[in-house]
Length: 101
Image 1 (cartoon, helix red, strand yellow):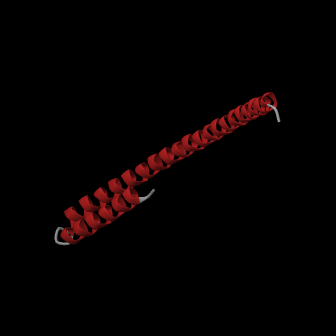
Image 2 (cartoon, helix red, strand yellow):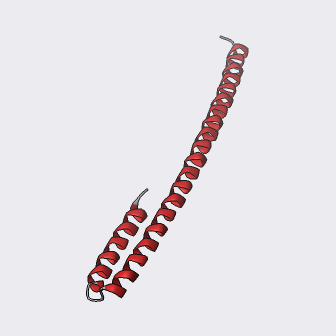
Image 3 (tube, helix red, strand yellow):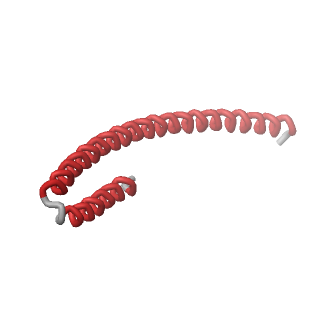
């Protein structure tokens, strides 16, 4: 082998490596774009779900406050037990909502 042919082989290998690196970079960029789309979509779904659940929790809390108000007015001795049970239930629901992923 002559020095010229070795030099040509090195140049060919360099050109091939550059072309492959460019293809790989384009593949990585495409994959990153797909991942970004999926993450944005899932974040939107999660935000919507959290909003729905917040509305449900708010409605439940309003119902419970009406029940407690009625119980306190009609049966004041039972209200202490109901208040404790309602506080426990509210804490349980809040804990479940906060720990969900």
